[in-house]
Image 1 (tube, rainbow, N blue to C red):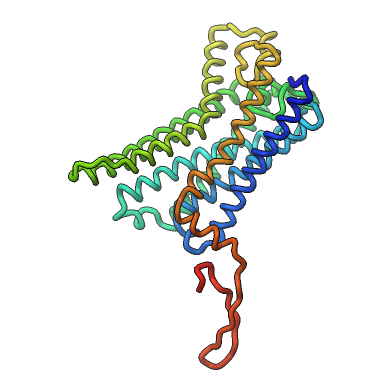
Image 2: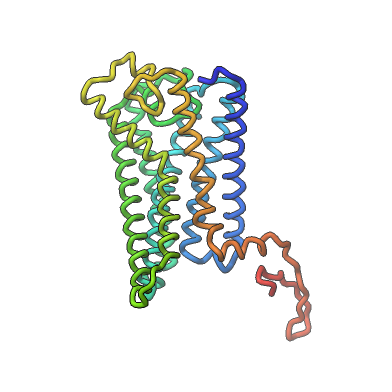
Length: 344
């Protein structure tokens, strides 16, 4: 896959940079939101913390595995860790998609139905939404794993890639048809729901912004730029999902037409399993997909957190050490209180 040591060293630097950036940005944002009393109660930042948690878990699961394979100049072995990494990755990806969906709907309610916002988004409902997000993602991953074990696994063999992704797992579990159909249907339905919810929410918010300035014969350029920014970032976030959905669709078409043969399946690309490709092209596509999967965890806190003015104003205050001040109670007793983040 990588005949040159220069390519290996370059990829090690790329994955180290992506993993460090993801861990640093997500960790700092999560730490700041957790310490801020002004931001932690808001529903959008509570959902952001759930998204950051799934991104951190995905990064800490996948990046070390890829780096270990690159540093040891070997592909990943199909074993229990391979299945565990695949299970955790499935949970994190579905959780991120569902969380982004609820974040878009939350912004829609805030902008278009602000008068009823606090009555609709209560603390109990918010906790229920976040709990259902993780529960549904875990249920999809558990169902997929159960269906995978209906086949015969061949453990201990070296795979053709640096990470256990769906095609690799299904191949070494004996190609269980039910698991493949379940995974593809679940992925397509959740992605479609995310796209439709996101599109509906931001189109309606843009229409509300246009209606606010239309009587004055003005153009709300700020609203247009905001919608274009979030939509472009949304497309970038879902780019790995689009590639996988296209790959699965073409695979099903090729399987229905009986184009792929058994020999082609053994030498096929991990990204495009329906078609036999030269090894260097297959390796390049596989590594590109792995790198793209680490991009959303790096940009999610920048899009939904640090880009927000309130978060940018709160983070510098949170980095300052807290000071303790002495107070005197009405009875004359001394007590110590921690000085807050707002300079109290």
